[in-house]
Length: 90
Image (cartoon, rainbow, N blue to C red; front, side, top):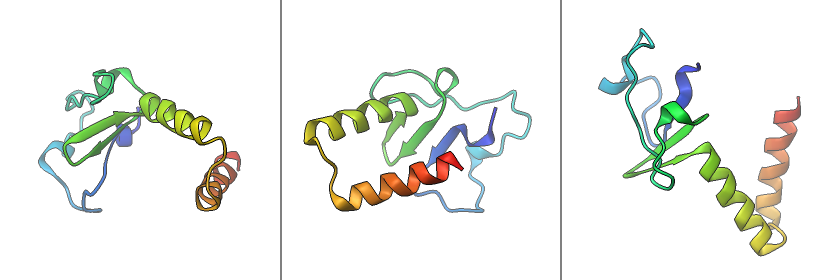
């Protein structure tokens, strides 16, 4: 599994936090999704923000809902989606 299974937003790059210093991979900090309550061991990725966490599955559901609800993303959102999916296909 990738070291980046839990992505911490707002964390300083290059700095090591106490919970990030697990080199063995055997010991893993449990982080739970604030929406579905699943731990990071049961999801693909987890994004950790200040006081809230969201797993990749819940994030995808939220994005799909927002896009379908608005029918059409704004021009700025469409540029971000195009840039993301363009990189993902390469």
